[in-house]
Length: 310
Length: 282
Image 1 (cartoon, chains in turn green, cyan):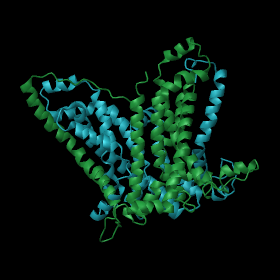
Image 2 (cartoon, each protein chain N blue to C red; image 1 turned 90 degrees about the vertical axis):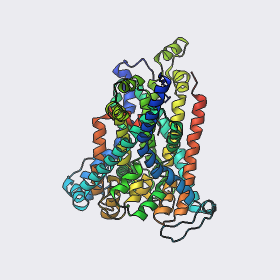
Image 3 (cartoon, one colour; image 1 turned 30 degrees about the vertical axis):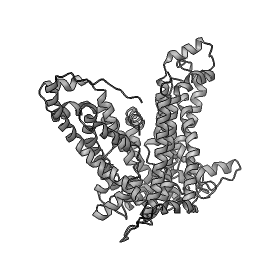
Image 4 (cartoon, rainbow over the protein chains, first blue to last red; image 1 turned 180 degrees about the vertical axis):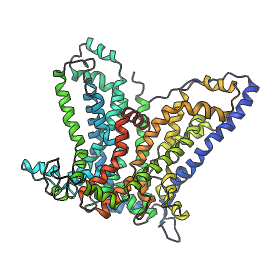
């Protein structure tokens, strides 16, 4: 995760360096030009534009637009749909993040704990990461079907009446969170596996000499402190990934029932691309961007502070 | 959990293996049921039994329906075209830029790099609205270009290639300059061939991300176009063709999931390396 900074001192005499320098600069601008153009057109300008649109009442097809200042944001605060959407997203992040971070760590420790089956289990838990979520969501829809789904069939066989997982507003966010954890835990597991391999083996030997005997205390004295930076990193990217939840909502619930599973990106999508209220949708995008940026900056600051642990 | 005890006996290892197997089975359940239901006739599906093995096979009925009613082959082909198109541009833009930022001295380098870092903060969903408006005004919506263009620039790829090239010895480039190679030939003959490991890792990351993407295709392609990517295809089939025909629905889901899962099983190590190495910064 750290920069590999190689000294790139070019020892050349002054006039020669000047000549090379100019050629190098021209080459550099030519080599970066395509990327710069694409960056400006596809990322920089649209991002600035989305912020600008958020301060207007623009609707697609409308002939005029007005700058309305913070009116969109004021409306967001009042809009029960948006407030629900924000709360649901927070719920999803709050449930899936700890579950898939702790789950990923537990799986990594279990896999690292022995030689047998490493590659096999790693592949099994990683499989959701490469699977088409829209298709897998359809499989989950069947599994969680209230009447014909195997989950409720299993519950019935032990005498429990299962909930209407995706169809009831009480359980829908929980059900989506279960799918979210399933989707993310394997990715976190692999990151933790990489973190574990980076821990020097002799530290464990040293701990043993110092009287740390049980696997439990070995984990808390050696593994956990040294995994600190990895954990922090996994934590933030999991939060950001959870914040972006869209596919399973669009496939399974379309925000329903009765807005019980509206999430930020889905609300932004429907406002913008179903109702064509671009200004309002842009305001939601800005809120989303702000949360992501805050999380990223927080992580960078914490990592900068903690990186010199050894 | 106990390093150094990797060579313990099978008996002592058994609890660990049992727990992992059980969890693994739980994780595979959606796949197992997906395939199982895709083979069952409708009456068996609706019987709500927990048996995985179909009593009568309905392969031709379920898969047949998918092939008859939706151009599933076309969807898969679209997925391949879009992923390939995106990847080619991403590499063509990011590889030279990454090299320039890593190895060439020029004024403005730090500024450019600052923009790259800034770009890393912006999720792909953010530019969607202005891009949609611009594409709608210029009539680009519902084309391959609309699906490909927004993803052609990957600041993440630039960042990754820059890190990769920084680790490359300067002597290699110096020697080439001494041999009289121009900057362009250096890129083409020295840099590109040496960038394969990073390029493969990025390629896997990129293809997985865009094969599975739903958000942008949902915006860029409308109606029952022939441009649907696999993710869109499944959505179309769900809403329009097969409401509650779970057999056919699972057949469609299986068919669209297979390509990447098969590729993953064939090149597991590379996939995991690629996605995590690239995912690390993403």
